Length: 80
Image 1 (tube, rainbow, N blue to C red):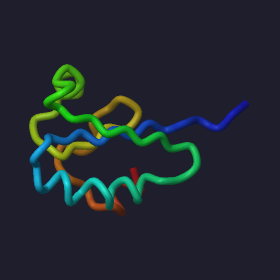
Image 2: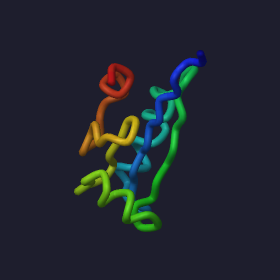
Image 3: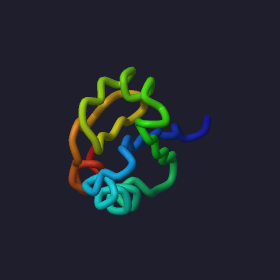
């Protein structure tokens, strides 16, 4: 049986400076075997943000569940 793939969704808003700063550090923290990284612009996919309950960006969902409603540190993301 294969190893489970963990889906990490980074939800951001275009023009959000905080999001731009966080993107690279969080993407690097999420890298590893069995991790699928997705970037979702909430302006282009508002339904996904609503489904997850996102009220501010950046936000991070793991395996379809909102884990961080605000920007986590790289170590918090790795731990999750």
